[in-house]
Length: 282
Ligand code: ATR
Image (cartoon, rainbow, N blue to C red; front, side, top):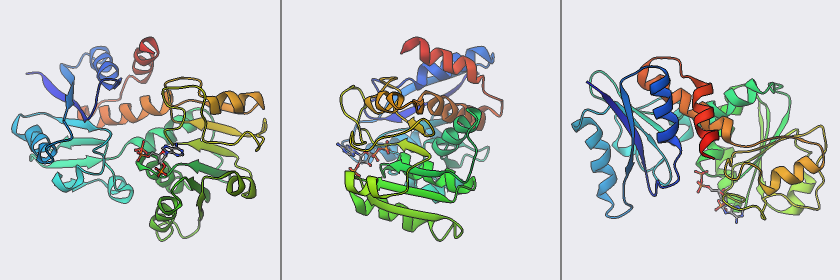
């Protein structure tokens, strides 16, 4: 019998996950299907019904995306330690006993991509722009991989503060700084060795960036924008102009998906196949 997984979110028109996982299952010769499962925002109880429906319908699990990564938590039976610490879930799997288990592969997907690209100097000062669920996952992953200098800058400063306060007690050896996302604040902090954009500024357009023209970058810096569409955001263009090493979010997208694939199937994911499927569609 065919195993079924899918993605829960709203809206799902632009999700590339069905394409990526369908290519992966075909390549691995697994009789699995991956389907979009759009869950409308209203009425509120629909999300609960959808999550319990996974079990009722015998699905093997699901990815969870915007806007439900936090909202699904009350409906799950258990969380992995990562998902618990991050407070967000992007992958659900049904265990053999029928329990709904929540995982978060976003941060680890980012780390795997970063390491694969040859960056693993935990002494780097990392500045993360944004303080949403993606930022929380990435900051947690950096800290659990031994990075000790992490700054978080966000338009709403209280959310950056909240992330710092959440992780300080878990990573006592690390210096975690929070600030507002302003030119003055960014100019006054030690220059980032690695700059990571997790805000939505620059998504689906090419003229806005979450950084400031007045703060120059350099060829010694690495700039990672988790946005993958467009593949060259204004931030990456700006950084490239200074000779910085630049990456878009394609690698993170593929690696978070590969980790979900392994959670569901127990098999290694065909990462290159998944990457090519996405590149072709972009
Ligand atoms: P995700 O789950 O992808 O992290 P999110 O939780 O909605 O998405 O977070 C979006 C991030 O983009 C937030 O940090 C948000 O800043 P606020 O917390 O101040 O809302 C940031 N963001 C969105 N639009 C922005 C803008 N125009 N300027 C700066 N930051 C912005």
